[in-house]
Length: 64
Image 1 (tube, rainbow, N blue to C red):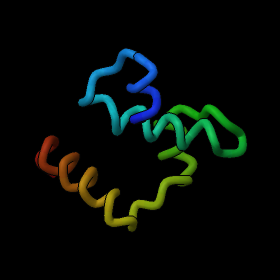
Image 2: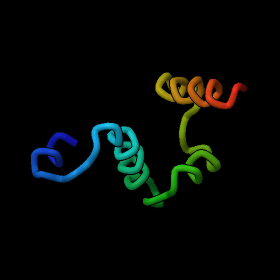
Image 3: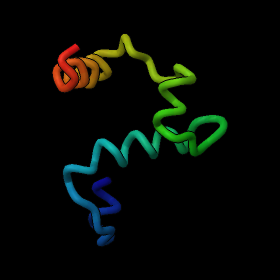
Image 4: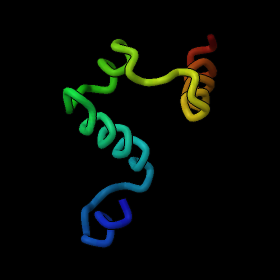
């Protein structure tokens, strides 16, 4: 991201996480899955510590 920013690529700092996940998805086989498909196909690890941050936020958002 730093290199892209240094080259003048316009993006909003708050979109960095989104850009990172879509970059990671682009590197998978097959490349370019949508995030919802990655969740449905369980290629994301819900036990990973970083995933817990999202899970906690989601549960709080929807009062689960």
